[in-house]
Length: 329
Image 1 (tube, helix red, strand yellow):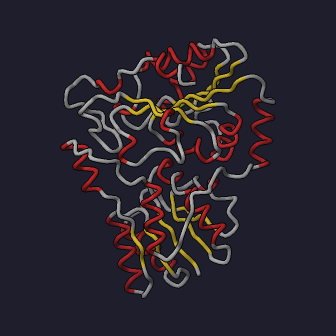
Image 2 (cartoon, one colour):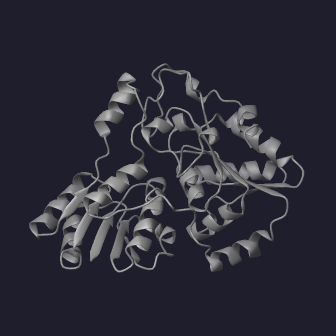
């Protein structure tokens, strides 16, 4: 049987599907799974023998949806929609008209809205992993929580060793950026963390990031601090994962890097500012003690994914000092 799994979101959201899809791949070896997602993310699924990755345009148009339907209507036996937006709903409708069953994820958007707007926090919401598992269960597919790590990509690992040499001492990753201002520490705090970590004996610091502005800023910081290198925008995803595998710890925000870290069983210390792990975006099997946040702010979370605006104008959720983070390492 051929299943089409649709997840067109950001890198971090797609990375969160990997532990669940890896479980499906091993549990149902005779079935075929097609992952429809954004370009350049296929490296996360390349080790799964019965999983195919199909790139979908990052700016999918309505005409593009119809073209996908024409392409897939005779190839696919079941649609699993992990995106649930107007365009994937339209694709779901077309496939149903063609007789193809559909299982669509339920994100609990109303409950998340209640938490962020009215502070309704009686209990933690379902994690994204649980929501994925529920959707696969609706399609008659059972998963488990046994995922530990993606296997080593030998070629990518070799390229990493050629570029950075054999590991000696302590290697630390720092991913200081996120999509929105509310999800990041102030720059002065980030620079202090880099300065203090890079000055430790036998320690090498790698700076992770993406985007033109981020890459330039990380390059400047790497030129200032000793034993510090910026790899932002320089590695393929497979190489980035293999470099992460060599690290001792990753310091990151509530962003894609905490989820990429979990794919190679790397301990991630994640900083949560305006967002909150109770919404469901904690890393795969991430320890509670590796989550850093200002716990006593009643205005948190004010957003599910991040914002550049603070209703009080002070971004009190970002007031976390470098010492608090460093003592967790």
